[in-house]
Length: 330
Image 1 (cartoon, helix red, strand yellow):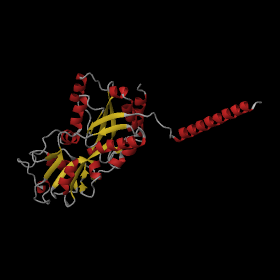
Image 2 (image 1 turned 90 degrees about the vertical axis):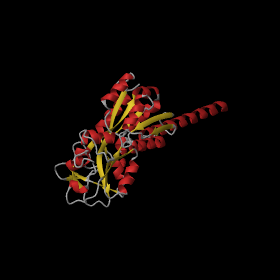
Image 3 (image 1 turned 90 degrees about the horizontal axis):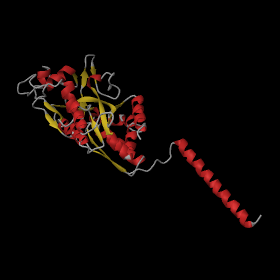
């Protein structure tokens, strides 16, 4: 055999060995779940609930760091109602909400030619517990009945001018005016409190309603006679500044926690679902949007990160069903 032929056979063998080695490495990566995904780029625009914001922002951060470095996931927090307005106008890909979409909002989507299910997909993300918070120096109201909380926040229940004293609630409490706080009407938390907790009775006129949850934390932490309501996650991030009121729903006082928040658990009376809504037409047109949606409901998304952000995760099967629906999208 000629030397050139021998060299040719040797080169071919080297190429084959390298190819087999590369294939083996690829298989090893597949077995370990470390194969590179298709590289994506572009924007994913999300707005809505301030309550859901920490969870969705955490999911977005993990996605951009670990999955798709060239995808820019922008998460804002205008509030549930304000977020839906943008979503209806087609300005966002996802709309986070701390309450279910309203019939009026569904009608507005339909006016734009969008139908729930066919064009808009609803995701239940996690459970949240509405939390009543008081100042650290408040030693008298650390436990309250649900009825007391409702009555104190209802306009005219105790005083015509709504300047309610703590002693109006219980005679042995301080004769000091209660400073009522809460999120404003842009937030689904306000709507949940007004519609589900107060049963649509008007809130006290003296309530100081704010856009930013951080402002509420500061106001209550600096006022001994204050009380406010917001999602459990914001309390969990500020336990050094605030005290969570234990609520008696009829079977003794229960504090909000990841072990008590849930539809069938002890804090069920103040438990609610939080959501995000996806524009399926955008997801079909832009692969980065669909890919991010899959990540949100994957084992790496809401299921894993809910607890870190003050939410109780849903049953595994719920997330799996969402992922199956998304995988079917072409």
